[in-house]
Length: 273
Image 1 (cartoon, one colour):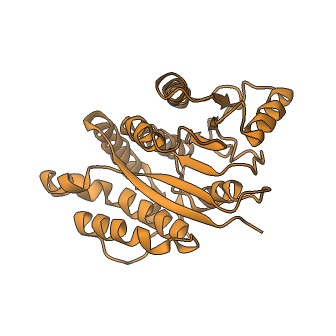
Image 2: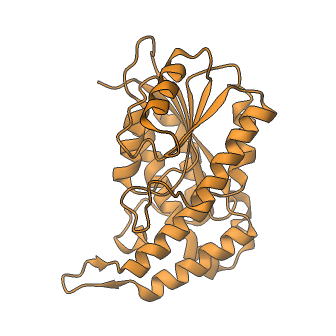
């Protein structure tokens, strides 16, 4: 029922400012998170808001733009390419269909400008700004592949919009929530005439570069290990049913060694802090 796919996880890291903001938000989350009477984690609306803000830092990491440009050099002559931006989903407490957060709006504009002006690709944005008629026209042009090469989208993979013609996907804002990233992957793998396989580039965001972990004190690394563990979980899930499952093993080992992580599953609290 789904198209076979090749999975390529590519790593980026937070810059100094992004890391500082990430650590500050993590400290607030740890301070305000608690367990209910049944022993399960209870998230207040305040904690949910903090989690969303932190997710947007990861999703909008500045290094992703430069990496996308390097990767796209090999695909700028292709078509039916999706670039997925945006960490906000319909389930977030401050979700607004017609008002994407400033970080998401900025990223999609930067990406569209880079693809169109720097790489001279035929590109369009696919957001809530387009009405239903415009969306159908964009989807038709995208599927045809002649007048349009790439689509830069916010949330379209979360809103039930089917674009089966996607052949190559650059997921810049991949979620650490299994339900969300499995859903997004499934939308990339829809069957389409002549589509023998799909290619997925997954932007894996690490708090600090693999070769720089030793430069940070233990307190900092302890505060960011859970992000690395959550990213590994997604890499494994994506790689498991890909056509090239073993290509991800080396990266997983490097992350585990750098952050001194074992193979133990993520505990409930680590899903948030």
